[in-house]
Image (cartoon, rainbow, N blue to C red; front, top):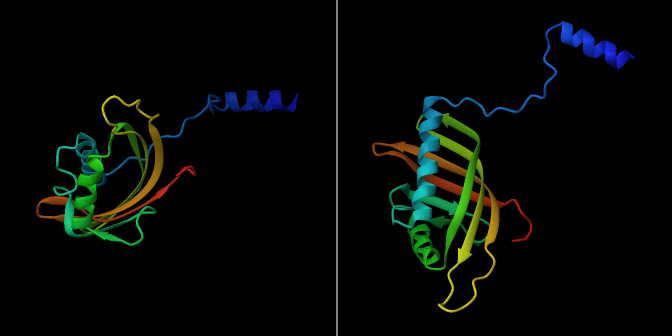
Length: 162
């Protein structure tokens, strides 16, 4: 009976009783510009058109993740990207921003990704089941005369089957 009275009281007070869904934060135009660079870098990487990483990275970039024993520089990121382009391709991906902090000419973007990818196989062999990776990324971008460029990238897996 108390629950029914509470529901009636809330309804009479004008408080909606429908479920409320979480809404993404409203990003400033500057945050949107940074996120647009991140999104486009993913599109270009998946397209394997040669724009990632060279068109997006600061020459002083460093990147580190669990698959590397030490931080890598921009040249290493470029070399390994070209090698990995020959090993497989992304079939589908989704990225979701979690936080974008900007101070002056520096932005830190924290986001998550889900990526379904397929290893390249020799002709005639049965393709293996696609792999699915879920990853957390924390990337630092700097504003240059040419726009926002990646200066630092740290990744770690969110799934435990890596």
